[in-house]
Image (spheres, one colour):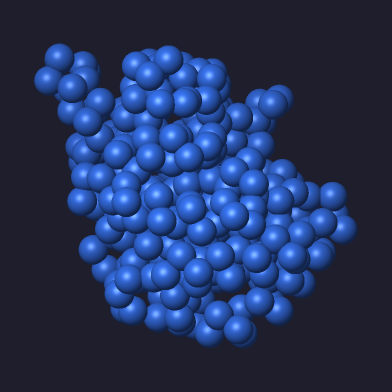
Length: 302
């Protein structure tokens, strides 16, 4: 098996992790958590989202969070942006990178964005153009790349068509999301076989949810196929408000254990990630479900 020497882990917990938490986390707690994550060796933290507050109340304070965190040199602080109005707020808050988002399936796109796929493209094109004019890099998220809670299985060609449109707009990197955690390694192989005909592996990241316990297996398959960027959330926090049954993101600490045992460098301090996961676990008031956190608790970690 040919493996990379180094991979990049992008922490999405403060956005994708917290967005499904019903009890609103105080702004000060979010700031403290991001500050802790900044001290782990992570080079990328998605701090929140500038969607309309009534859509996701948990992230209504993203502007205040971005303005008040302690920024560590070498760390990119990103945020999700749905439209030009959201972009203005993100730029005012000093975001480093802008993330745009849509789905590969019509059903999820309609529930998540309230637009068809065709209606979404011009909205995102404006955001990408203006973000680039402001000197910001842009990441694109494509949700439901393997299966959709409304439409069922999603073909790799559908994903490739959406990715092609986003890259044509000027997006720098695309994160491919198995939003409901339905995928297995054979699905990942089919998907990447299709996409890697047209796009370079360095342009793609993988974003797995662990709903059915297959996220780490999917990560290994992605590594085999040349992917070196992976999204995760400390503690395995997460889920999608518009994808019924979607559980948490693959846990950052579980990824770190996997990579370390495979001899792949991340530059991230495992123990500090565990402490950061412990911090948010205390904040939300329930045990986090990652394998490494369970081991930590069983070993008597306080």
